[in-house]
Length: 271
Image (cartoon, rainbow, N blue to C red; front, side, top):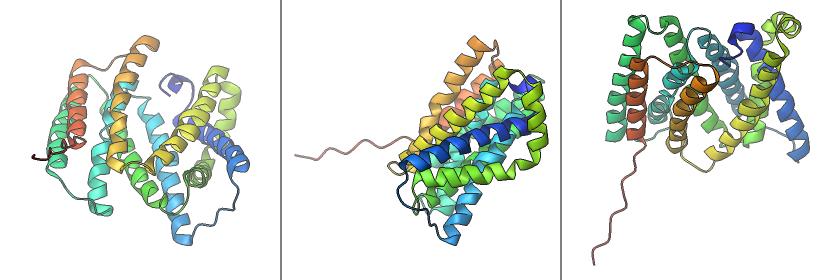
C-alpha cells in the first residue's frame, strides 16, 4: 500500500482492491459452497456492517494514512487494535474485564503518547497519526461484528457478503478508478490486485476460520508480529523507517497488548 501511494489516490486503490477480493471470493463460493446462503435479516445487516467497517472504511482510511506516514509507523499504531478488541469484547460480548487488560491498556497508552509526541515534534505527520488510529478503531469494530456474525454463518459466506457490501460502498470512486487504470503504472494496478486476492480475500478468509477456533483476544494477539515484519520490510524495500521515538512508543504499545494476552500457568496439583 505504501509503495503504491504516490501513484494512486486512496479511494480508487481501495475500490480496485475490493473488486478483486469480491471476484476471488465469488469464484471460491461457486467452487466450495454447496448450499444456498440464507442469513436472517439481522445477521445480513450485521454482515453488511462488518463489510463496510472492515473493508470499505478501514481500507480507505488505511490507504489514506499511507500518504502521510511510513508503513512501519502505520503498522505500529494500527496494532493498538487488540486492546480495543479486548475492551469491545468486555462491553459488547460480555467478556470479563481483567487486571491484565487494565494493565495492558495503561502500558499501551504510554506508547501511544510517545508516538503522539513524535508527531508533535514534527517527526511524523499528525494527520497520519489520526488516520492510523481511526483505521485501528474501524478494524476493531469490524472484528467484533464479525465475531457475532460467525455464530450464524460460515466464514466464506461472511467474507463474500462483506466484500460485496464494501465494493458497493466504494462505487462512487469508479470514475477515478477507471482513470487510474489507464494512468497509473501497471505495477501499481497489480499491487491492488495482489492486495485484493491475498491479504483481503484469502487473508481475511483464513482469519475468519481461525476465529471459529480461538477466542477473539488470542487471535488478535497474533497481530503482534506484524509491526516488526512491516518495519523490517519497509526498511529493506522502501528505505523507510519510523522515527526512533515512534519505534520506542510502538514497542511499549505492543508490550501493553502482550500483557493483555498473558495466560496464567496451570496450577500443579499437590501430592
